Image (cartoon, rainbow, N blue to C red):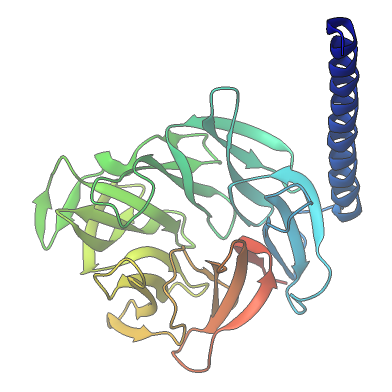
Amino acid sequence: MSTRKRLLVLLALAVLAATGLTGYVLRSRADEMSAAGAATGTVRLDTPGQILFRDTAPGRGFGRIAAVPLAHPGAARTVSGTSCDRVYAAHGTGVCLQRKGPVPATYVSVLDRNLRQVRQVKAAGFPNRARVSADGRMLSWTTFVQGDSYLRDDFSTRTSILDTATGRLTDSVERIPLTLDGRPYQAADLNYWGVGFGSDDTTFYATARTGSRTYLVKGDYRSWTAHTLLSNVECPSLSPDGRRVVFKKRVHASADRPWRLYVLDLATLRETPLAEQRSVDDQAAWLGAGTVMYGLPRHGGGWDVWSVPADGSGAARLLIHDASSPAAVAG
């Protein structure tokens, strides 16, 4: 074959390959858009009797805010067009953490009841935890600024608080004066995460870590003080009545199953292990007065939301398939 013919053959093959690749890309995008369009609907953060969460089903715009009925969590979900890496909402206000941009950065969006962004804050690190107080006023979020796991010794977090009523942003909780075991305490390795507020919008609970130990911290936002209550507590979440916190407790040194969910009575500091036997690396949320829910990764990929009774009885059950980061909006 002559050189000219070989060049013509190679050119024809290149055109065919490019055409096929273009067709594949267009078909893939069309399929994805079709799936996303079929799933897209109107999600409002103030609709009572629903569970809000991140939809993690493939082919529907991964991470979009979705909702199912609180009474029927297995029902067909409504999926919005808003994507988050971590989300939480209460009383018509939402907080959405998203990693995005040409040079990836974490952006924290405050959302109104219609999922419209009313404020945005750029944060250091990677999205990790998010909470909104019951009346929607106080927001908190945590990012990993070094490391990517609570199992690493070198991890570091940054936790911020936003008062939506005054607009006051506390960029880092680390500067709060802390009393540890009855004594004023300062340390360069002190980290906080998982802040959640009580109904008075000033009392909050969080995790503090220093010297490779974790503590449950009770803080006061107005007086800007905090003190430790109990050791070996991570990612606390306050119950609707303000009397208990669900948290993850380090029960094994191994990386396979390090944590177990517990509920703590704040009046007596009595701990109750929950029936979930798997290791849960999440900030569990309250589904109601007697049940908690949390995200768990599946073997082979994907996430699901599970629930378990808060009194240590019963057994864990699958609540929402292909979901994470749940928040209950009561009726």
